[in-house]
Length: 156
Length: 253
Length: 107
Image (cartoon, rainbow over all chains, first blue to last red; front, side, top):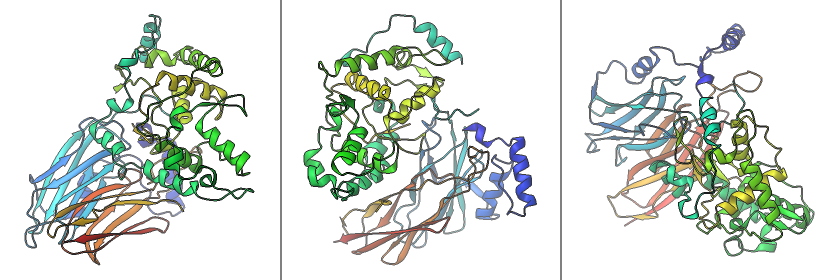
């Protein structure tokens, strides 16, 4: 739910408290500007990302942000010398920018993976494929996320 | 909430039961991906609960040292049709009981074991396992002299306005099904897949849990788990859904 | 006793076929970003890696983040080139570790 991911004064106090106690640097429960870009660089370094070859399949309007079906497919012959080494998926508005990272072995067969993800808010999702020749390709999709009509908790 | 105000006004228009041929399962409102999640056992998280239930079915327990299988044999032979006709009248309790209460009655009376808590993993697992044996069968609760007073009580609960929003179940689920509430399509509210995996809960849950969600959503006081009101409501809702196919364990948003 | 993982691997295949493998595991995937009733953050508890090996050779491995939905479900593919055993391993926070196997006969 949206509310969970706003930093309230209470969160700030808690985070401050945790930092003072010497805990490992706490993750804020809201997306920080630039965090997606930082996560992408951490995954693929300085490689230039080009649009294409990757198809990111997500429903444009999700039924429930807790479980959104996602399929990433990359056009590739998947031979020893010409294959997809990895797929990384990122989001912009969740508290953390990474969604999933997949590594394919030589006998992977198809550069395709399906799973179910969580999305905190309406946002763009980006999938980046790293090829065996070092090039990086991507696809981006906008997803609209709504809340359920009848929630379980009497939360503010 | 503007939605509540609009519906409150609309609710004053004569409310009618949905004609039998216009009844639709919540399944029809779901996206293809969520339907696939329900239809494919490997992809339906409820399957894990069904497997747990299957293990529990054969486990000897209680002071009597009996398992469900000791009396009921192979569930695939003895259980088809059972969940489809629950809630059913219990002579022991002199009122209808739901499948979870029936399971607990077996535990206390036959197995001489402690009853499972409502919404516990074990109770949900057994209820899902037993319910799965009726998947695809038409809902067939009995409406006779014994059960009619309770069906009527359930219907009164269904049509009574309650809570801070002053809504009744009927306002949304009989009068405005098919329209949108906060961007989400309103279903008719048939309990034809319980216990089910609700994406909102990210876990399996019972009809009582879902009804509590509705009550809380309407800003009404939810009854305690196991309250007769839930069973009366469930009996009425299952009667309202008579003939529709059971989808247990279903997946719903 | 509790059923933790469900695997769907075809029982047989022809050599060279690309087969579809579906896996489902029971896990809360607590994100670490939610607040409990007393306002405290509920600590993260997720599966962090999932690896599939085919006769000992790693064919597919993933790193999960909190953005993966509860009860992680993953579908992926493999080239069936020999009869043998697939081994699937899930590992995560708090020492979580589950291993399952599935056999395939390749003609």
